[in-house]
Picture 1 (cartoon, helix red, strand yellow):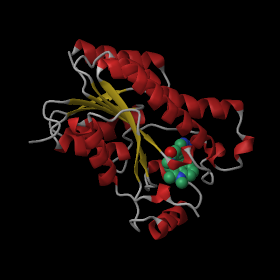
Picture 2 (spheres, helix red, strand yellow):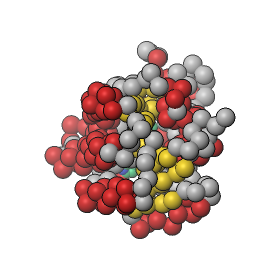
Picture 3 (tube, helix red, strand yellow):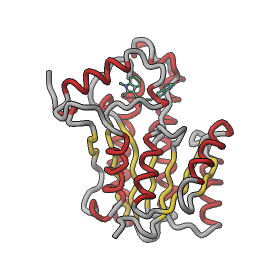
Length: 255
Ligand code: IMJ
């Protein structure tokens, strides 16, 4: 029996077919979930509409999570169509290019604000709105990275934003648990997605992980999708407020 039959999943953060959000959407759909996919702006509209067309019953919706009105209008439209959600997957982050390119100490007030707003606060705002559409309870998940816990070169203000995101997962889990809603994060190993484009030395980071991680390989997007199925499904019914690493075991290493 599929694990997510008759479940509705809202997946936010697909930019293209290589996005981790796309791997998550594909894995949820494989297990029978009905997909609602959001895209940020007109630039992503066609891509995400085409991706939605490849899944049975999937729909695409506009939502820029840095804009409260767009969040409100997305959830108002879902509600007016009587969509009850079972799963929310948030896979959205942004920092200004210059803040991923030089010393962290040079981060401006505005750069810090933008990174935390888009990458951490957006999950709080969307979780609150999604919870209102989860009368049966549900499962929320977001994507994080080891740079929240350790210093990883150039990750900089994104590491601070992911630390805030991971703490937000715990506070949301405490608030929403009594309503039967679980909140967790997946911490994926480095994957060459649009979010890695132009990051200095990214290929060498991938090589080092593949050489040193316990499983001696990089993370495959499908592994992140399958872990998302676990967190979205009743198999993980006793788990909330957790950060689950899907990184070939890299995070256990010391020097
Ligand atoms: C990003 C920057 C520096 C090092 C990095 C990354 N490593 C990894 C990433 C080692 C794995 C990718 N990652 C986990 C992210 O969260 C990326 C977030 C990101 C990427 C960009 C690139 C383009 C841009 N802004 C961005 N904001 C956030 O302009």
